[in-house]
Amino acid sequence: MPAIKFYDHQPIPMEMHKVKIVQQLTLPPADRRLAKMKEAGFNTFQLHNGDIFMDMLTDSGVNAMSDEMLAGMMKPDDAYAGSESFFRMRDKLEEIFGMKYCLPAHQGRACENILAERFVRPGKCVIMNYHFTTAKAHITRLGGHVEELVKFEGLEPVSDLPFKGDIDLDRLEECIQKEGADNVAFMRLESGTNLIGGQPVSVQNFKDACAIARKHGILSVLDASLLQDNLYFIKTRDEERKDMSVRDITMEIADQFDMIYFSGRKFGFARGGAIMVRDEELFHSMEDLVPMFEGFLTYGGMSVREMEAMTVGFDESMEMDVISQGPEFIKYCVDRLDEYGVPVITPGGGLGAHLDASRFVSHIPQEQYPAGALTCAMYLCGGIRGMERGTLSEEREADGSERLASMELVRLALPRRVFTLSQVEYVIDRVKWVYDHRDLIGGLRFVHEPATLRFFTGRLEPVSDWPEKLTAAFKAEFGEDQ
Image 1 (cartoon, rainbow, N blue to C red):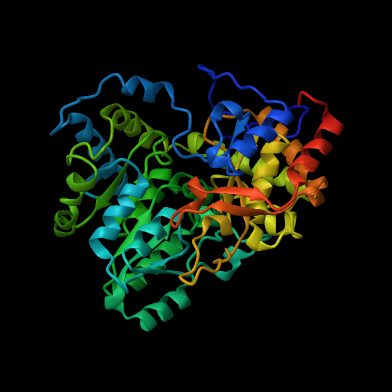
Image 2: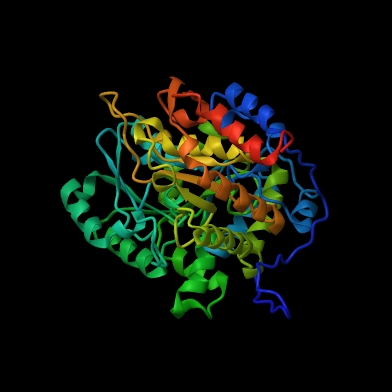
C-alpha cells in the first residue's frame, strides 16, 4: 500500500481497491453460538459458515478475486488434454520463476503428496525451517521424518527480528553430517513459516541454505504458498532490496532452488497448485504421479476456470499494492493488540494476527489444548472463527503421548481484500474483552481423535462448564442479542 498522508488523522492502512460484490454476514446471538460450538465438538473446523460472523479460519481459497481474475474465468479452454488454459498458466509461471517444467495439482497438499511419493522412503529425512501439518503428514506416513531447524529466535513470541523464519545454517550443516547427505530426501524451505506466526525468510538465508544443500548434493524445494507476504517483508525490511522490483526479488529467490511448489489457494488467489521443476529428468521422474493422483498433465485436478483466474492472480501477486494489503492489516491488528497488552506474536507476520495462547491462557496445561480452547472462546464471544496452531495440530507420539507444540497460537487470518478496517476493529475489541476475562476459559479433551490430522475432524469437550460461564459473563455485559 502506498504511504497515503492524512491531514487530520493518524495514518491507517488504505485499501487500493473498491468493493463491487458483497456477501451478507449475520452475527448469531451468544446462546446460539454456545449451542453451535457444542454441536461442532468444540472444533471450529466443524462449524457451519452460516453460523459465523467473522471467518478468520484461513486465507486459503477465501481471498477475494479481482475483476480481471473474474473476467479471465470467462475464457477457459476445457479440453481434457492440451488445454490452452494450462499452457497460459505454465508460461506465466515460467516468466515469474524461470523454471520451464510444470506439474499441475489441485492444491498445495497434492504437490506435497507427489514430492513425498517420489523422494521419501522409510528412514529418510526431510529438512525444513519449520513444518506445515500436511507436508509433515505426507512424509511421516511413508516412514520418513522431519528435522525442523528454524532459528531459535523464530520460536520467541516477542521479538523485533525482521526474518524469524530463517533456517539455522549451523544446525543445517550439523543435521546433514548427522543424517548423511544420501539419507536426506530434500530440503524444504517455507517462504513464511505458517505454524509459528507467518514469519518471513530473508533472501540471504535462502541463498546460504541452498548453497549448503547444493554442496552436499541435496535437492532444494521452496514452498511458495506464502511467497507474496514474504516478498512484501523483503521489500520493506531488507535495505539491500527495497529498491528492487517484486519480480526481480522473486526471480532472485527462485534461482536458488531446484523445485518450487505452491498452493494457488494462497499464491494466486484461486484454487489449484503446481510444482515447478528446473531439470527435465527430474520432471519426468514425477510426471506419472500427476495422472495417478490428480488428473491429466494439462489440468492436474484443477478447473480450467480456476487456472485462468490464477494466471491473472500471479501477475497481481507481483504488484506491491496488492501484496501489501494483508501484511498492513495484520500489522495494524497486531500493533493495536500489543498496545492493549494482549499477548501476540511480534513482529506481525503473514497470514493473520497470531495470539500467543501460552501467555494468554497460561493457566491451561498444554495437554488440555490452550490454543484450541482460546479459539473456541473467540467464537463464543464474538462469532469469530480462528484456527488453532498448537498441540492440537500435532500428532501423538508412537507411544500415545502428546507431542507438545513449540508454540501455542490462535491464528486470526486476514484473507486478502475481504475484510474492512472496521471489521478488524471489531476483532480487536472482542479479543481485548476475552483477554480481560481469560481466567474464565478452561481446557479441552478429545472425545473423537483421528490418528492423522486430528485437528480437521476431531471432536472435543470442555473439561468443565467454562463455556457456559464465559457466555454468561459476555451476555451480562453486552446483552442477549450480541
